[in-house]
Image (cartoon, rainbow, N blue to C red):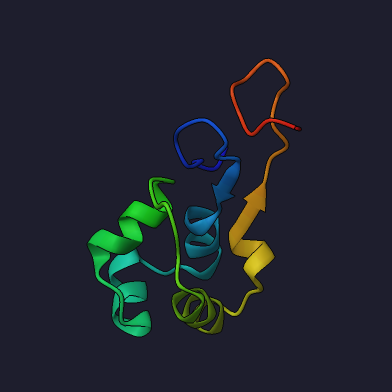
Length: 87
């Protein structure tokens, strides 16, 4: 299962581990090719990022040969969880 951002209302999953494994690429190699620190990529990979710049997302997609939807996913909230209200 992909990591998810923490806290109520965060239903975004990150599939960076899967994409790296499919491409036989390390996080360090991706860092060099994208121009983002390993620490920041690790935060994204582990689902702890609160935001991502479109320029970074575009560069990740370019290097990984994927679409944003391959990298990020949305999980509908469970009605029993705290999350954004429907009001």
